[in-house]
Image 1 (cartoon, rainbow, N blue to C red):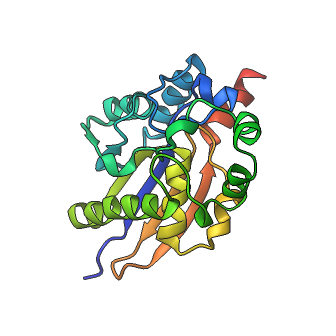
Image 2 (image 1 turned 90 degrees about the horizontal axis):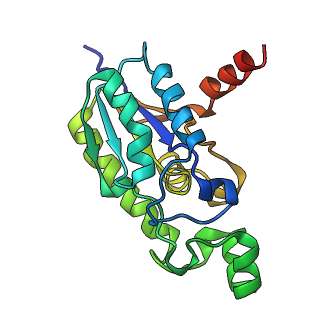
Length: 214
């Protein structure tokens, strides 16, 4: 009998004030803004008729607050997982691109243009981030083969993870974007082929804006 595919819903957390201000957040534990809380409620409604077997979440507050309405709606407990915590940017956290460019110059702009080829404070390299997130993925696959799993995490971490999981060119980090509470869906077949089904799906936000403006 053919085995069921495993489906991953990769979800970026809702908006924070630092998102709005364009500041690196990393491991700094920032709360959701009022807009972010509204986005999280819309996201939970999106999952009303979507089967879900487990919810893994970064242990940072903004991710937990985003995942909680889904968990309540589906009757599931959150599974905290350090593998899906945001990238640690060390002393860069709290600063904007303009501030870091002014302070560090070329060492920072080189990283910004090609982050996989350069080091940064905190975690040290995007290759380490990729290894960390893939270790979390391997554990999920062992436990949840054939199920539907949500991973509520962060924009930076999820882009690194998708590049590694799907074998994408490393330059794709600067060529894709994940909106707050967007859903990117990846299917894994019984023989471990990976398929990107949707990227940065934010239909729940777009529909809310359309209805608001009617």
